[in-house]
Image (cartoon, rainbow, N blue to C red; front, side, top):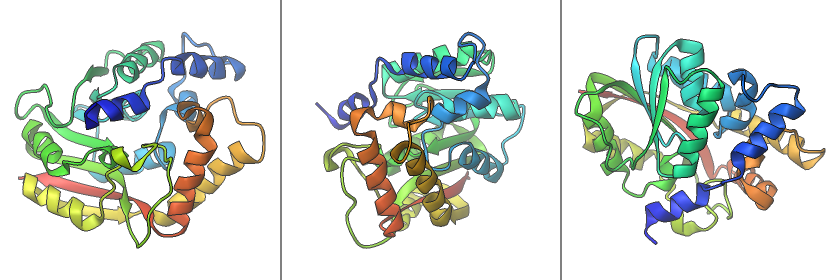
Amino acid sequence: MDIEDDVAAHYDNPGLEALILDGLAALGQDPDNIDPDVLAAADQLHIGGTDATQSVAEGAGLHAGMRVLDVGCGIGGPARYLAHHLGVAVQGVDLTPESVRTAASLTRRSGLEGLVQFSVASALKLPFDDGTFDAATMLHVGMNIPDKAGAFREIHRVLKPAGIFALYDIMSTGAGTPQFPLPWASTPDSSFVEDRAGYLAALAAAGFRLEGERNRHGFAVEFLQRTQDKIFTSEAPPLGMHLHMGTDAKQKIGNLAAGVRQGVLAPVELFGRRD
């Protein structure tokens, strides 16, 4: 099994949509007419949830009329957020077929299929023509990509001139090694956490000019503490990121929270402009 197969298998969860629909029903929501803002509790699979998605969108200057590529879209939470709140047309790509199927189904149930589409694809070989998109986003995906420069070159290729690439990834920010399992990898074999310098070098090699950055360590500490409080000290809520992580969800989130608190890891926003 190669790295991409291993990553795809890590996120494969055939029962996930049923868990989410059950959670929506428990909250009194119609599963065939989903409010994307309610669904966000379970489909924003990155530190900070919708607040982080909004921050990335604002930093990138995304607005209605733009065509955006979301790399590593998972079950489509950020894509639906951009479509629902900004009127952006989004194409999501992901390695895991089941994630793409679930993303398409939840998008249809949310009434957003006219703005959001999904396909199975690798960040290293995007199935789009040169200069297709106005912008690209990547949220908590690079930790699973060893060849970041290669992925960034592909993103650069499919962006229009002056297109913006907004990424929000967990980076190595201090000495020490995080404990596994983590939300993105059960073992170190499929975890490729890089530091800021490595990301900047990969962006520059791909032809991007850095336009902005923000380390969101404090924001992450607070968010992860709230998440732990919800799933550790009381009955887990009907919707949440824990639905994606199986029986060791508490351990994965706990290890991530510990790494962030200790200064080993932090989520960082970077914004690159295509020349």
